[in-house]
Length: 367
Ligand code: SF4
Image (cartoon, rainbow, N blue to C red; front, side):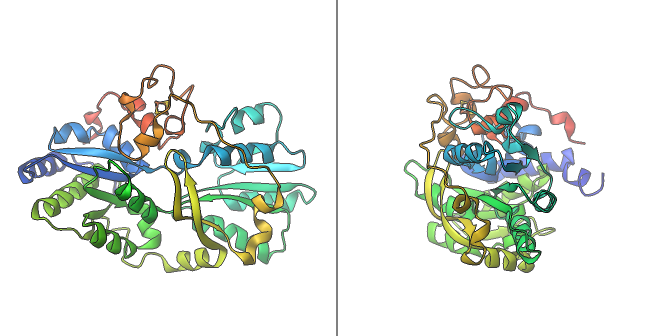
């Protein structure tokens, strides 16, 4: 398939891996930021191709995984109300809260619906004027513009029974939090290609300069990732630290300015809790004053809960690159995609789910 096969060329992947091995003089540690990148690494056995030349650490770039338990509990509390239609993308339904999840609630009769666009939820609100329709807005800068646009449309068309339960998070403050965390071993980052297609990559330059860390904005196919790793190790070996853009077919330096304008209009930057990591200053979005009437947290006075994580789940350490799924005693035993104990197993982009799914290296999927 054009635009995919050329980035899954096995011969090219092997040549890139050989060049990486020729370049390194010590085993560098590189973190890929996005869950989609983690899945490609495991699906195509890229760690195996690299042998021990580079250790890949898997970052917290899966929005479902980092949504805090408290917010899942709040979503469940709102969805239980009889006049509410609660809308979400499908991947949030099985994320465990303290005692339950949205799918279980749906099975018990609550009106929880899977939608494919936030605009579907706005249309539901128009259709059911006697109900309150809530959309669970989860994601990084990639999904935030569509959610902002839904709120903008609701306001413009006079829809007053549509609300956003907002849990948007942003990547640059998360990278800073990882670099500042005790015990950090990450020496370079493969940056988030999709996020940068919206936001550009200028804001990563200050991080790279300040922390002397190479950041290579990277795509999601095998040869994208190997080229990104090669660019990282060339910088590390030369004692350099700058931002490079490997994903130039999708990412421009300034990003998508129309999308950035709608984000600035509808959202303010705020501190956010990250599941397994804790609060990170200025790492998310909340609805701005001009759109506060659409804020579900303001509309529904739900008491803040103290979310309970499974005591054996080490997903917090996995999300910071300090541990890997096989280090968890529950991995593949008590915790599986069918019975997940933590969000990194339930999400399709989660690191534990990727290790479980691609436990056997499948190099044959490359051409
Ligand atoms: S395997 Fe399950 S319990 Fe262990 S860290 Fe992953 S999600 Fe948590």
